[in-house]
Length: 432
Image (cartoon, rainbow, N blue to C red):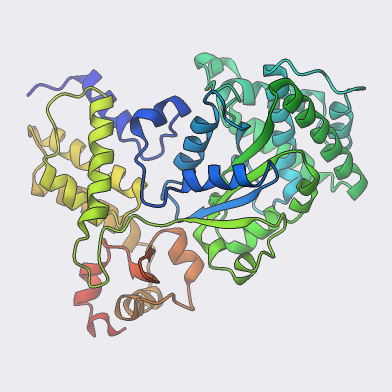
């Protein structure tokens, strides 16, 4: 079968593992898993009367951003109880950033949303002056507003997504990094931060009055932080947000859920934990788990149909094998599908065969293996043997998904499936 450049571009775009779905795309492409995190978030927001604080945590690539976009989609429907504002606060965030580094982009998003809903300018317009006092001048604020309106870490309350007019603008990451840097360098006093929050409060109140309903801030991107401590640092002043006339949802890495401070509600901002677990594609003994695999097969079929790609490139047995190799990590699954498909195209095959998928699996395995030393291999061997959370190397191994966490009648752990074959034949087997 002849597949031209246009077809290949549509295939790669459909299975781009880093593609962020728009709220409109969620209707066709969102796969509702058991205990849907998006549904539980909406439920918590409704029950919280506009004051809920939720932290959505999970492995990198597990689907947290998609869940937030599904929340955005549901709250953009007629009759929804809240106006949603989705902001990527992780983009451009310095390594040791605190809340002050990302507060300006939230303020800019609130202003853009208020203007989108034709809300009345707060009396005296305190926002520019308050931001200037913490190092965010008029030029940077203008850049932030261009970013949230045009190039897309923000999705507006009416469900509008980024336009294609961003090409002539300063790259979003540079604008956001500059704002975070300027705010962090100034080391503002508490009174100056209080002034920014007071101005943000007025923007949100005006937005709520114009929309006739409450507001929720969906703050994505903290899962880019490498450790639980770095997330706590980024939220170090999050108690500032407690007085906002808005609910708040943040996303974070799985390490945050594993931290006792988080489970004890000691996170700044008093966030309620909610976990996006890996899709269960294996049982405790390593045997395939059909229900979890079927969910990823559904995801593959939805994306294939949506991209109108014609006859399937991956036969169902290959999709099923890719699902198991993915360890139930959505991003990993999409990567394997994409790379296996590209391998088949390079080889001139009409469909992916065992060798094509094997090549994709090998490349993903080697990318992970190259970061592992003898100590980490021993830790992984113990995890395979005991199915328990390790006490060493946890942050690094969780960050790269070398260890995955599953939910069943209890929480249990297993090395990434890509690493299991070596561990099973490692000297000493899985005993470490």
